[in-house]
Length: 418
Ligand code: EPU
Image (cartoon, rainbow, N blue to C red; front, side, top):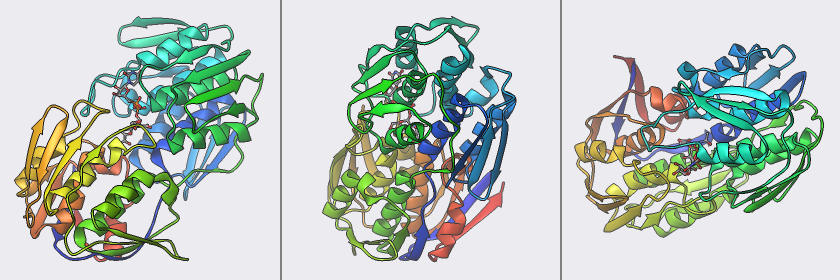
């Protein structure tokens, strides 16, 4: 198991090229199942979750290849309609094959994801929507089996905004008979990117990016032809946090600041300066950050996937910050680790109160989930002395070549096997 050893305490400067969005790449790769033949997708990030998705598809008989940021997904020989426990347990996004398999082949068997480090994360809303579209769903031996001769359009209301739920049902509806209306749908940029990709395949979708999405089903979709994934907004936000906490000066290339309005607004209040330049978005950190409060919300609110990195910044800010996590019930696993680096944070239910300290000290810490690991990297980069971050495989699930990108901006980072 690799560890990341970071000697922090200096401002980081230089350029960072942002990779494709993990959470757009995963659903778009599964959208290939909706079409017969070869699908090609570009700006695919080089990540562990993307390899896991490749394995999942290969297990179904799909020919999958990845080369220098592009994938080819040939579904002609798809012969197995199952997402096994071994893969779903390592990546919950595997559940995204459910909608496409059911829509195109009328059947799917997908392991029910268990709880995960950040919360219970049920998929009841995915299943409710598919049932409304006429699927027969049974749960047996930890697996969801879904069957339908042809899905039909339906009116579906989500009690809770769900990103992958919206994506699964949008893909299912694209090949259903009739019109589907998704109400209280997720508005994340990744949902819109998936809709744009489906539209490029011939799907009829209106309203993606808004809370009501209308999908008029078609009989057939064309394979994806060189669709380019949007840049990763959470990777972008993480590098903004790195510039902010180290008092650095970074140019973020190939990013979409319009996908990060809430994050940029908060970072500006905290003293970070942003400037659009020809080379990319320039982000300059202040001498000392100013404490600010946040509350996580579905898009366009402050993203839960940036809460941990923001908390690391607040750990050294001037003043006290109140952080409210409203999306996942257990997303404060990084707090205990940040405390080991000298931060002063109290947690009461979903609320964390962060009393900013003057500085952090390097320590051995443990990564517990993807964004928690990112927060430890952010903290370690400003801490005095050496930090060793264990279980770095969590970070590799979602950050493309992070050590290389950090070294390019002057960070003292090395990876070691432990
Ligand atoms: N929920 C239900 N029932 C459902 C589905 C969701 O109650 O059927 C609840 C969840 O338990 C949670 C809330 O709804 O409390 C929102 O969950 P959502 O379904 O939106 O999360 P997700 O689709 O499983 C995606 C991202 C996550 C990101 C969340 C929230 C992907 C592959 N994953 O998860 O990304 O945190 O949306 O924005 O898109 C990450 O990249 O580190 C990550 C965890």
